[in-house]
Image (cartoon, rainbow, N blue to C red; front, top):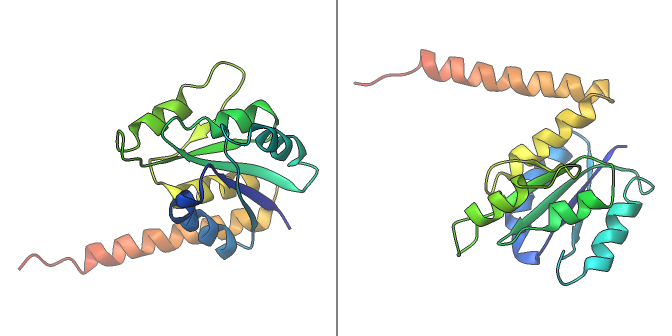
Length: 161
């Protein structure tokens, strides 16, 4: 079974990560969920990222707010794809987190989804995995067709009376 590591900088980020957990489980992918701080537990962050591939993890989602260095710290210690999930903070409504994630230096890429975009982080992880796992690709194709059908149904039933 493929695995996705979901690492959050603080337990308070769990609510933002739960949509990723749910969509991964829906597709039969096991999430490994951890709280590891880039600033307060840097040794553990490095150890997690360095050992992730050996633990069967194939993609990492890093959720963090404010300075949001977690994705970059993890990406610096692994060649696995890392998806940044910026968490809305009280400081700048998550813009600080978003900018921290998308402004990575050359050689240390971190993909990034929207602020509090947990579901899309999970879906992006699934799309990456689908390159290797045809069953996930088939499930994603079905998922997208279901979304399409819902929009078509909503359009057909639209009434503005």
